[in-house]
Image 1 (cartoon, rainbow, N blue to C red):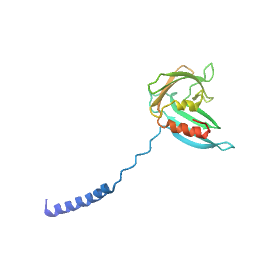
Image 2: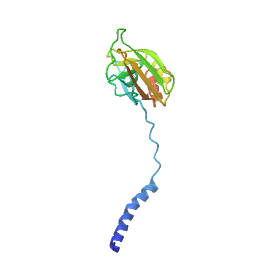
Image 3: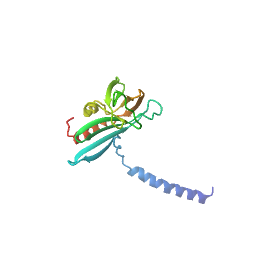
Image 4: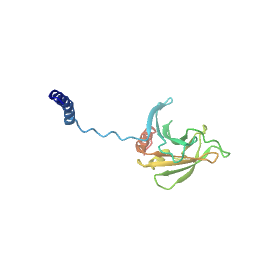
Length: 183
């Protein structure tokens, strides 16, 4: 390599290294990113009285079995018309049994014991509603970990999914505040 090329190469390398050295010296530690949440929260108002509405939705994180057209896809907790609710939804439908709109629901928080209940269904045949206080149920869920749901549809088929819980405490707080309910 000629002397001219060596000088040119050293000038180029020095010009590239100078901005990098200056950037490293002036670089401040970056703040940690905000904690992510598994719950997407939306705000709205309701009817003539303009009451606040809060909807917190949690999309399925992990599926225990293969693709399931009638599978559990989403959890939805909300305050609407001054009332709270907790709903399990599907992308398909679960049907109507001879006994009416009701589905067998089994849920398990982390590695805890499974809890089996009968939840009423909706007229659209694509959701099951928690039959008790939604905020108390959400209060029983840890802010870290997961909850698994298995829903038995009208034909006796089981559909299941697992959801991450991170952020459930904040979602619960926003829903309680919108419905003016104490925690």
